[in-house]
Image 1 (cartoon, protein in one colour):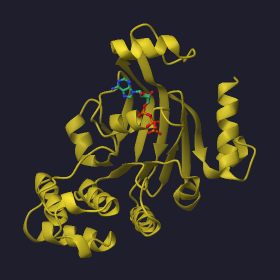
Image 2 (cartoon, protein in one colour; image 1 turned 135 degrees about the vertical axis):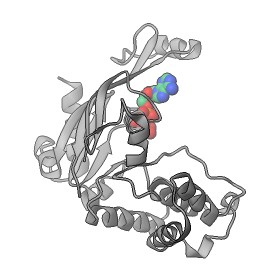
Image 3 (cartoon, helix red, strand yellow; image 1 turned 180 degrees about the vertical axis):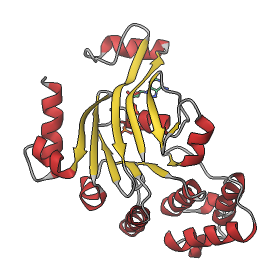
Image 4 (cartoon, protein in one colour; image 1 turned 180 degrees about the horizontal axis):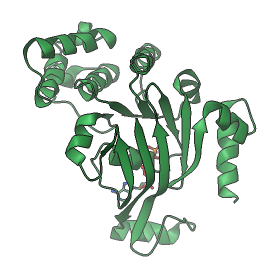
Length: 263
Ligand SMILES: Nc1ncnc2c1ncn2[C@@H]1O[C@H](COP(=O)(O)OP(=O)(O)OP(=O)(O)O)[C@@H](O)[C@H]1O
């Protein structure tokens, strides 16, 4: 399981950013020298659960997920993965977490297969264990038709499948996916959704950020909403509808955001 408590992360403002800040309306995340992207974020996800991380553009979801992946160090707060303190022990945290980011690239000159195998080797897999794990992922993610194509020549969907395979090749304890279906066609989206369902069935906790509430309805046991860097909802889907006073998830989401901004 993964438990996140009171995460905070601020960034030093550049000169340009400071100029924009002066011109913008008052934002509680701004101060003289820093932009407080994540101010107070807490949630948890148990074995076999899928948690959907929601929030408007710029709310702080990617910054939060990058802290979970250990790519960014929080200014304060804790991240615990199966009892391991991932802030104090980032190497152990990195091993335990599989992270798909929106920005990581593949090695363009390597084929899809070579990309996944390369990351498997970095995680210490060798021989038949490596071959079996890669084969399992190639089948689950329906990758066989493009395994020998160079990454440079892959479509967006093929690249995303390869990125997902590479993120989970070491069978991490927790899987974190930043907008895994953004920009994908319907068939590729379905493959990714089925893949997440498979992880859930195996008991692996999955946290994914998304703007697609239909995916939340299909996949999620829990929902966490971040607004202006703060968790303004964290609970089950039923509690989400209850607090948002609507059965339609988009209405519930809008009500939760409005309540948060008018407190
Ligand atoms: N390195 C940085 N320096 C300054 N500000 C940053 C930095 N990284 C992120 N931010 C700011 O922090 C805020 C949160 O960004 P983040 O990418 O976490 O949002 P998000 O919820 O993932 O948004 P989206 O849904 O658009 O992907 C944004 O206003 C962004 O401009």
